[in-house]
Length: 114
Length: 116
Image 1 (cartoon, rainbow over the protein chains, first blue to last red):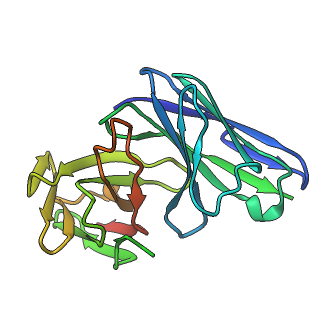
Image 2 (image 1 turned 90 degrees about the horizontal axis):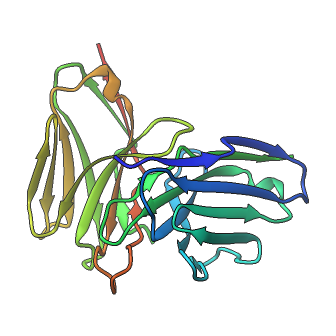
């Protein structure tokens, strides 16, 4: 299957700071990238859909000003958690795909906000 | 509103036997279904998928069955191996949506433990 990477794999930050997470498709060009969040023992919840060169589409209840998404190229999307708070602590996972193809997931980023 | 449900949070199966993981959905617009395997602190790994025009898809030890009238799908793993121990998520999408990639709706997962 296709390879998707995320960086960093783990991050610990102080409350009020911003954290940037990168998602890269390494061996294919992804027209669309998705960002998910998973709390312990729960399902993956879609946060937003990101298409290269256009604004991200956010799911209901997800604050677009708090979770900034930039999809600058066909191989890179970034998620910035602005003014992070302890309740933002979670496991963030991206996936990448092209039209009609399977979503391939990155390894995830564990964020801990102190 | 949980559109994709996995009612069994956990399943224990002996090595060599068949593992059957179940998934139900409510949205009749879903026409493409996938199974992912996930280890703790890792991203999901794609296992197998099925389109709604089929009722069965097989790949090695993994077979997915789809019953559209019952809105039910299942993943069969045979023979089960200890390395299969993980959390399995089913996911669904309306695959073709205006030419854009479709978002997935995930179930809550089933933790499979394959014992020796």
